Image 1 (tube, helix red, strand yellow):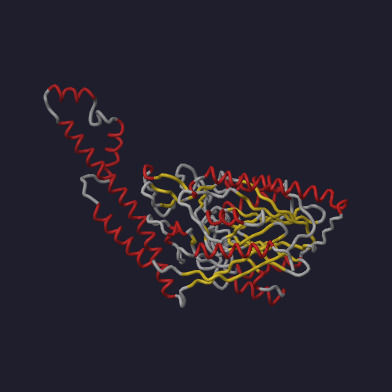
Image 2 (image 1 turned 180 degrees about the horizontal axis):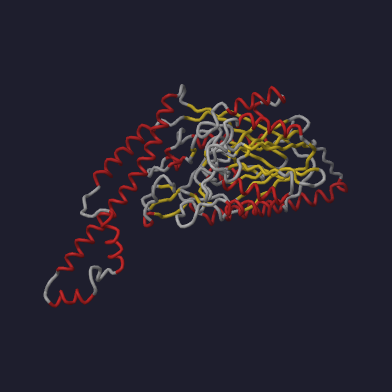
Length: 533
């Protein structure tokens, strides 16, 4: 499979929603056929001998209650799945990443896998750990608590029925990359200011799909829900306390509505360039709860329509993919440094400071024709043949314009400085590496009709949309932030961005990584779709 990136495609939201509607129509057709076969199968001589699926769930509180005030708890949640030949462990952690940044150490995954292999004889390759990417602070003994959650899930396994489906939610997130009129792209961050409105031409896509796996006990009571969605859970809460953020609130809604004992496990999707929709709102307290409630309710709406059935294949494929490390960072650093120097040289002196600029700006916005005094004073000047006020206005307007130009330059300088520091950091990391490739885990998991692909990077949303569009299985979903952390992994097009945004600067890999990844994922999905020998 060859990756093709169209320059305009990422910014056509109507086209994206049309694609989602077509996927939904196909799912309705498939569900209808399945229902007919289920109803008439015995008369048609159809027999299904699927292996029984077993599942167990447990959770552990991993909140650091000493680091900051706690708004809501952080959890490590474990789902253990087993059929007659395969055992898989899926862990979701309310943390920023599995290693590299935040509290979780780089040896966390290896240590958890080693302990589970020793104590439960579970192959390391069959253990998947996903970080929600919330920015909560986890406890120091998160490793031990995670292992304990898996052991409790293992001990509680029971026969289950499984069903896959998808929900829809498009109100809580937005793409944070802004396509500018000069063809470059900027991004929406708290680390720096937005570009001026008149420079923004278009926005990027989002993925409104909620990937769902429902696991029910034999008595029909829900045991667990896996839900996959793409959005940075970084909205925060009014108290500024420790929080699991959007996904934490969404999980609470799902669990409370499906009944005691149900566990909702959130799998972060391709959220590298997707922000909460109210991320830069300065007029209201930052509050993730309303957004999480919307996500949870949308997931519930779809979950109620998902039938579960006995059996279903459990398969896992894990491969190591060698991605090329970026070889152009030195050049990109030099380019940004040149831009930085050019911007500094463009700053021009003005007699105004902040104290004089603000009232003068308001004054001249109130009346463009008569800003300095009432209109009759201007008429008096005209009658006397004087131009005193006109010349004052011209001088003030020139100073106001110069001051505003300086402000925009300084805002651009902050964007350059932050992203320049990211490039320098990753240049040092790549230079210190012993190889020019980065080995990463790519895994494929099939649970009945539910198919999941995992990757350790912060995938841009377009990559997830590409994979879903070409996947052979209808209910195929993608989770980043899994089994390690390698920073942002933008599309090749984003990686070549001349505007320099976080996703293309906070990045270790070369642009060619995307094609290698999508081709490997296609092969893994074909393996998962193939009949067992």
